[in-house]
Length: 222
Image (tube, rainbow, N blue to C red; front, top):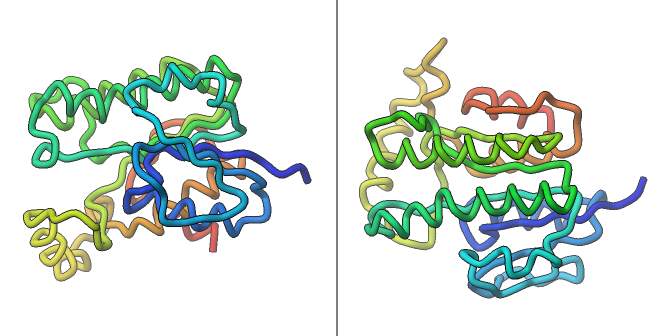
């Protein structure tokens, strides 16, 4: 089997760093291209690191070649209070990456969105995520997977006090969410990563993947 090349955007973040570790150890991948503004902690012969301004992805279009793209980019309104900058991160980067993927004939594109994404939402965060999803789907990439996780667990490097408190609450309340409410349970980043790797290496249907579906898919990649 021919080994593949993957691109990761957001490899220095919580989910992206776990994804990078798993792809490094996965024999199906010979090269992982990482486009980032900061240096990686992980070093490996498989990894090609490109330090760039992610708002200017078009400038490295000739380097944006691979079999798969994993977009793990995301910010918060507290970290990025300016709405225009927030939109550039959560909409602009994924949308541009999808366009480059289509242009360079990359057939698998995955992006982490969020539960509640809706381009018609009155809430800015949900509306931007919904508009991003629409822009990605407009590219009609053969294997497009938009993951919509609920609250992502795990320990982040940056401080997010409200998120930290909510995670504590969810650890107690998750077991109360059953049946149709299961999709609201918090989800671990490794679960998301396991699902993404499975999706990239299977013939699963393209489209939006809800949080409870992410868990079900991840169990297939154990």
